Length: 191
Length: 246
Image (cartoon, rainbow over all chains, first blue to last red; front, side, top):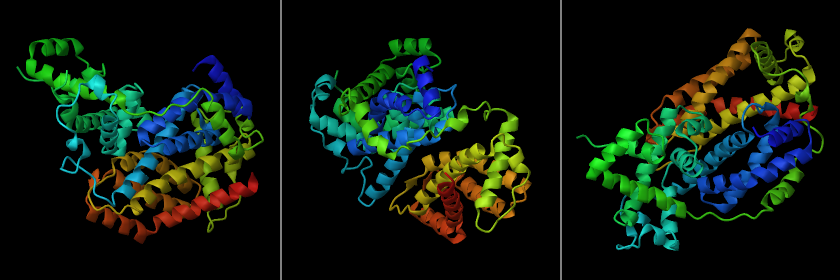
């Protein structure tokens, strides 16, 4: 752990609010990005940031100083985000979800789409990407976000999710396969 | 020549393949695999276009402003600056003994006098406070898993793999608390934890996708056994005690 951060954590543990403030200011933006990518929802991401710091503050006594504080926060945020996504998925199960069928919004993408660099600028494609992420299970989405966007190794993803690397790898594989099935019609032939 | 699997290609994309060099060589020679890999790369590369709202440089300060009303104004963790640490087998044992003592003490039907457990703690007050947090957190996590399954009403197959991971993680913790409760003679608490351990094991070893009928059966079982209610009572008494004492 970086020395300045280590000192801030140590001071925060002794009740120094200013030290905890430093940690909040340093880690808020990465946590927001993680929260948004896991939920796809801005207000959920805000909720995740706030709840993560509240939980961290309450549990600071249990933080192992040898570990990375950022990683510890990520673990708290990931668990909370998983709960949020699962709860939301349950609510949305009231309406039929697409599973590779005619209702899949990704399948309705027009043919002859522009190549990926231009696709990236298209609002419509962004919606398709978000829809493809929505179609992942909470575990798949989390594993994918941690591996793809946060750059964690499979082993780190496993540690973050509290599972064996094999299980984490499986979640990443399933996520990528689903995304591929959903998005290949958009980008499959473009160079 | 056999083709590369999706798994190999995905690991290669993320730079985690064990055999990167022969894999690269294969891609150079095999057009079919090269095409599949190209398609995979395009899909994963385009994921970067996912929308991500920006937050300004002052975002951290804004978060802090929102947090401050919810944070205790007095130092809360000073006990942990004391020399003792949770590391080490002796401390772990003391923790478990005291945790069982606390659960027994807070459980409504079980009132036991303070015994040898207090003696093992270097600072009983700090120990108790920390353990209340630990026990409360553990009970919260257990409840969360059970509540999610008890409230699920899917009209199609439900993926419970994430709940299974959490249930499996909680099993070890439950077992330790249960054994310690038995050791200290808290039969009521041990009984609740024994039941919880059994339920958690059942969830952890169930198929990861449950048909609606299976979910329904699990829900009925959870409700019939009343385990959720008993955990909630235990948790609630721990929390109430916490409020009075802190």
